[in-house]
Image (cartoon, rainbow, N blue to C red):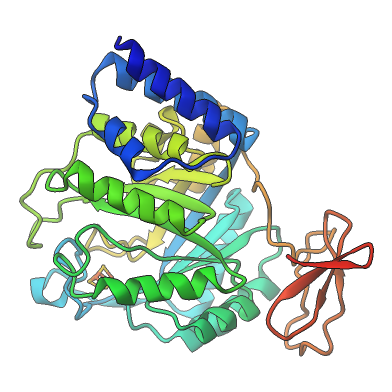
Length: 383
Ligand code: SF4
């Protein structure tokens, strides 16, 4: 093994444990390693050990509900929903009752983050009303995450008020080239999320063999600069019939290497590193998240009534346990009361909503109609 590379990896791990985030140049160096080399094996082993230490053995299990399977006029070159590719033969849209039933089944099976995912233009008001109803009808301590279209600052606030804990958004690989979106539009939505009380989840995706180390390092550095709660790694899954469907998928060795780089480069302040759809592979390289999916999946043209590819939430819990993780959030939405009930009764106005005592024994109160502030011995800090 090259001793200089080993020393670099050990130094990064040491810095990561103290909360440091690495620069793009460091990620570029690690991306330049041969994915099958001894050095990469050391990188992966180091990232796996660091993940246990940084997470305290806690993992996030996300259950995604793809609300709408229908053609999308944005025609991203990798997505099965693109209208121009004509792959979606039968449109399906979930009803609210179906969404609530799926959310309940997920939570009962151990999911601690339910994601509502839609195509770009699905009505956000409808989704917000569902968020309120899920909070009322599905008991349990779980986060609600949104993976929807573009958001303004006002929309991000409205989602939070309706019960969302976080939102997922991505500046994708070759945004503006393989997608019709101007990168600045995606960045504007990311900024709206980051500036709102929502937590920010993101991903480096969809990565293919066509992307250079420079492009990947650039996206990693951007994601980390936004102080996310989680960052994922996702390959471009070639869907036959899409413009990129004939380009082979990136190798599993390379995916593991990238997950390990991200885990160490992110430092301990990023709570979850994830890999999807081969989540189990990611666990070998330092991820501490897992996702299962139902409904519309952008890597497929069929609607999944049950969990996609048969991977159930129950099975995901078993896989996480055998990798040494419990499905427990590192820090949950502070709007849960001590008894795990949700803070605001359904239909209650802000004025009718009392302050709450969080699990940490701290009182959370409304102050400016925008944020929850935390009262600690007379001092107030933004929570
Ligand atoms: S990735 Fe999203 S925006 Fe692009 S075609 Fe698919 S659903 Fe539409």
